[in-house]
Image 1 (cartoon, rainbow, N blue to C red):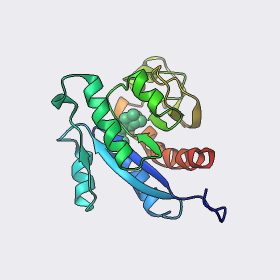
Image 2: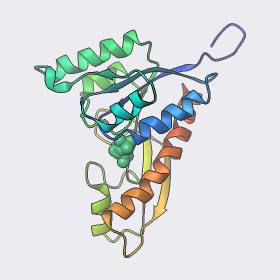
Image 3: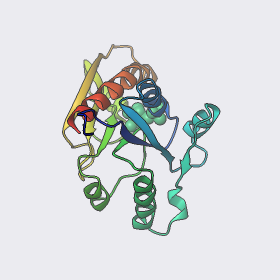
Image 4: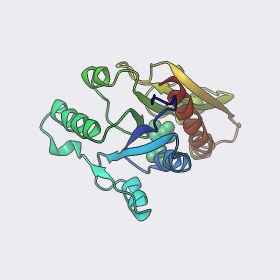
Length: 197
Ligand code: GRF
């Protein structure tokens, strides 16, 4: 908070590993609200991730921190921590970031990491959420944005959005229906996290 009572823009870093559609949705949301947000860093752990190319095509600077170049997970996380800190990060958004973060890393960023998960948590933690929902004959599915705690996909939920599951859905149909609500859900959840900051 500044002296005149206004809040400084929240500096957000986004970590991603793949396609990067949530990363791009968050970016658009932040860029449209410069009074509320500043992009601290866009960090990817895989050199060939589609999201890297998509960000670079938009003229955005990305930071590659390739986990495979570090001997230990601790060394990889130390490099991320140093970069996040030097970028002035207030809040970290995990957007399809496919490395499990250690309890030590999470503790360093306590209540300052949020994640999107493609299920209605606490249902279907972990991978293959769409397949598992279909196998169970679930009638509804969706996505959740939550604070990150050491236990995977277990932190307090900020926001969820439901979608229907139809009898003839394929895994791809359901994944596409969920992804369409992930983007606005993540942006709205980011706004809530900012209000809470
Ligand atoms: C999304 O479904 C997200 O919920 C999950 O990984 C996927 C990432 O997609 N954690 P994208 O890279 O954001 O397009």
